[in-house]
Amino acid sequence: MKKISLAIIMMAGVFSLAGCLDKQSPEEKMFEELEKVVSIEKTFEDQQDPLVELEKKEKEIYEKIISLGMKEYDEIVKLADEALANADKRAEHIDKEKESIDESQKEFKNIDPIIEEIEDSSLKKQANELKATMNERYEIHEDLYKNYKQGLQYDKELYEMLKDKELSFDKLEEQINKVNEIYETVLKDNQEFNDKTDQYNKEKLAFYKKAGIEVSPDKKE
Image (cartoon, rainbow, N blue to C red; front, top):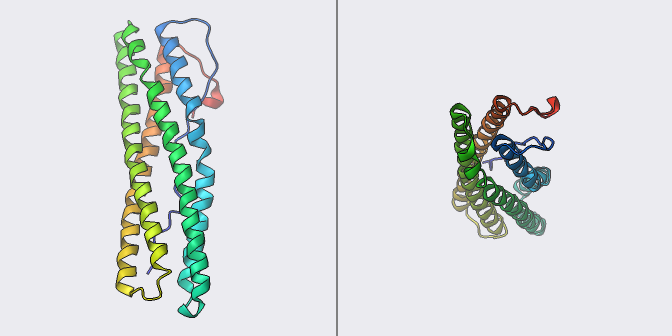
């Protein structure tokens, strides 16, 4: 019986940051605003490595607990408490990530009036498609966040159970199934989020190219 390993959820599709322009055409205003969003999501990006390390540690703790027999109950309790503390730390990072995405979404709304200023109809269409892609990305992250938080709750319930000497196999199996199911959903959400981020980045660069805005070659990710 095995609890699913997150191993490892890398949530961030990373944006690229380019330089500033002097002129303020609608296209250049759009560029400026989109790159502000990049800067805001730096906090989001910074949560990735700590989350990965905590997820690895949680997996190690779980495997240690499962390998122990009830004669080593005190050690099981100690490890379960470590796992509970680990879940709290993961919650802190995922909450910071969510705050960064929320701030990004708020900033992104500033492109609405700028798009209306774009005179070229095909370029305006591209801008609206870019906007739609990014809004879909925000929606996916909302689901990802909710499901990850639910997974943390199920993890905590599991580790509290493992401290119970009277825990039945059936209850343990039921809880592990709950944990596995929610993290399977998280993994799916995560893949969708990364795919949507890649799509957005490509559409953004295509918009810049059509608008005649040059970006550094090393930023074309």
